[in-house]
Image (spheres, rainbow, N blue to C red):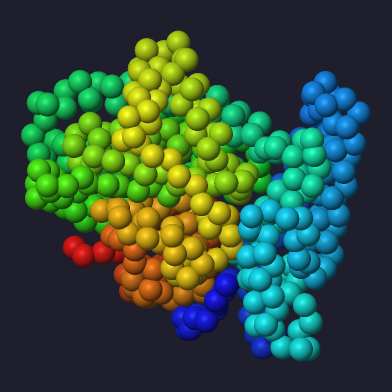
Length: 459
Ligand code: F6P
Ligand code: MG
């Protein structure tokens, strides 16, 4: 796989500063960084929870597979304990050993990381490698431990927490579905302005839905407990970059100019399952129903990822749960959504690229088929924080660097990041905006309290 690219003039975020940056103050800064705390505390916590989950399913494995199930559970746990030890003692990052579709690409990427180091740096290690790489690698190693342990090799170690967060968000989901069904029943009577207002509302709901991810909370529950629709006005001041108008112009113009000639397609690169996924599906249901779009393509993850990310199983499971709900509006949503899938207006696709460690500027080289697919969209929505880190290369950018520049050549189609801030990377701010926030609120970049709609494309 070719990696010949010029790196933009900024450094990848790491848990600890690498050789050459070990100035005292800089080092201190890194030891307090979110990347450092993630690798030191949050990731071991997630690993411990995974081990515990496997333990708790022991009797289920036995019932299903007999002794072989128990042996498999033991094997997976021992591989995961080894992984936790490697991480906590900052051992070199080792190649993947099993033969899965992406194993070679991962190992090539590891070699590439090695090639970036000087001889005296030795091998890439957990605390000295780019944060994005290490974090992705950890989830890939969890998957490796599971697939090396047949017959439990299809067990999703995060499924239980994903489902739990869905059930704990029931009331908010019902409120949202009720809102959508009422809105859809009056759609014909709405004028352009009202339609726009509803669009903006549902966009914001989808943004704040991104607060509910389970990797930030170390795998602990992170459900949406109150009715988000009533909080939108209060949350507005926390939107740091607001390109919603661009999205509206783009889709409403598409609707006017293309209605008769071609289909408007919106692609959504999904993030978390549970409440966030419901907010995304509500938004795109509205896009179809209001004819702002004719076709929606979703992209999910092929393996369990960053605890709560959506896989095809989560996607199908959630829609089935909605359909069989006792609540009329919730079940109507589930039935409509199933119908959209059946009739091909909603298309779910996955691609191995989404669970590789590469930043998106490498997509056209590493996964040209996926890049070509995204080029067919009129608009691509990238949900969540991890997508933002991959869009911007997870670098220590100046806050005022334009988004277009940080994308580093990744422009398959007009795109928008819809993300709450949960990592120390942010671009495209006004002069002084980041500094002001940093002075008044030290955790602003990572708390999930702030959000952005950051657009790139022709206006
Ligand atoms: O663990 C770090 C991280 O990448 C954070 O940036 C973020 O908290 C989380 O994982 C993923 O967030 P999201 O689900 O929004 O992509
Ligand atoms: Mg996620």
